[in-house]
Length: 248
Length: 244
Image (cartoon, rainbow over all chains, first blue to last red; front, side, top):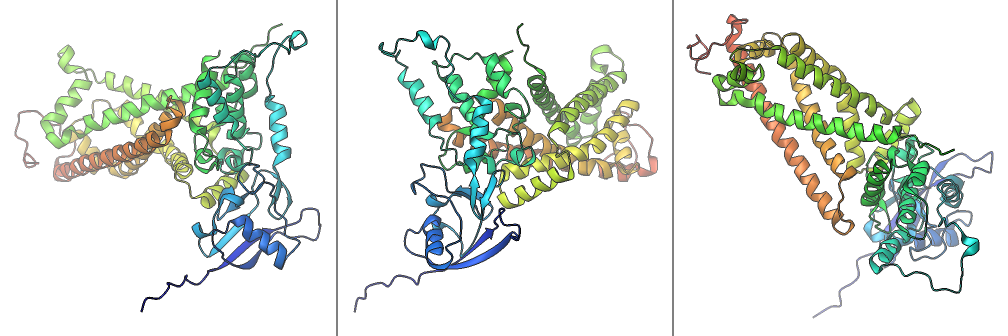
């Protein structure tokens, strides 16, 4: 007699979380293990939410969009950076170790202040359109159209969500705290390509033409391989490097 | 007043890549010339005399070999001093990189560390090799080289140098390509996969070629040990090692 095939028994995941509250002087960094029964299409974000809801309401981790758009839930998953909301538990072994992203200020447990780092990087690299004579700009006239290919190229680079995974995956950034990372170099390329930004290559060189910028990159390519948005970071950095060498 | 951007970092990066590229091309060429021993002593003798300019000037000028050794030494020194900028500079940095590499399990990150280690090893191994070539440029030939390798125990330097130089050169060439080549973003992943395959192919090829020629020099050197110091004379049947 035919039988309806039974679903294999659900796995019990052992989720080890590196816990620490830097605001509590008594807190020591330690690993705490939680057991979670795996569900269909479970993401790490869902697993963490379940832990917080049912086992330990004090567990800290970040999330906003749950769809890989906001870049808040970047964590180290079994040694590699990734987004909790985009990582399916079925792709992971029974034992999962989670840690906060390195290089960023720790808020507590898995929560880090990527925003502070990104803001510092953005202010240092001045990642906004620089135009002269803005006071004479007539905002009633139609903006000059951009070539569709160029617009698409800019859009591709704009897809960066500043999750910090490229910084956490970068050996250079681990060793040198002032390195701007792929996220910073990617943004410089984005504004360098933008015809509305009137900065010259020499001006961009002032921003990234040293060892904390594009010439600090050692082409380890962790950024390219771990970017959750699969941005073409290696080719962008190579482009910027050639451009900065030729700008003098 | 106009500000002058500091071109130093750009120049340093280009110079490191450029000296690296020249050294890679040199070592790959070097391998074909040194492995002429696989074609026989006559072939290797011909090649060694070619570098002394005998075929061009009618008589050998070993000084030419010294000049090449000196140029290569300078290239290595420039490359090394520029590469040192990237080495972990303190115990803390070393520890951070090590922990990062161990956790990440990422091939290109680990390969960079392989380059740091092999590069460091070559400070000593390549220097020793170049120094001998520089000081004794006329001491290269089917028997002279074999005697140095076997009776002079230079295989102890050449074996680890062979492994270091080819890992370093192969990985370096791949990294150079990723660092500078304008690869279209859409196909960059496929191109990179191919480059890496080519890289491993080249490394394995040169390691095989190098090991085979080093083994050949060692066998010739062992058989020639009782006559160590005696030079190869082309055309003359050399006792008792002639058949090797």
